[in-house]
Length: 68
Image 1 (tube, rainbow, N blue to C red):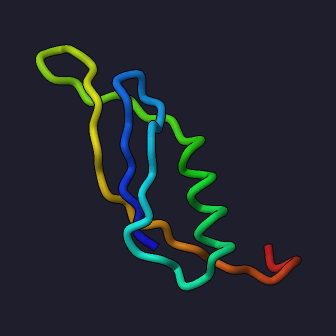
Image 2: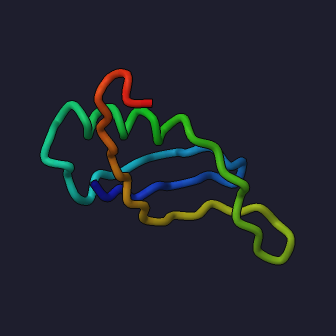
C-alpha cells in the first residue's frame, strides 16, 4: 500500500492519506493507525523546523505462527 504522510514541524504525523490500497481493508486500517503513531525528525529549512509531506510504501510480510 502507498500512503502520503504529513508531518508537522514538531515531527508528529498530522495526517495520512491512502494513495494505494493493499487490497484488504483491515490491513489498510491497521497500517494507517500505525503510521499515525510514527514520529520523525522534522525537516529543517535554514535551521528552522518546518512541516513536510512525503509518500511511503508500506510493505506487509505475513508469517506463520512459530516461524521465528
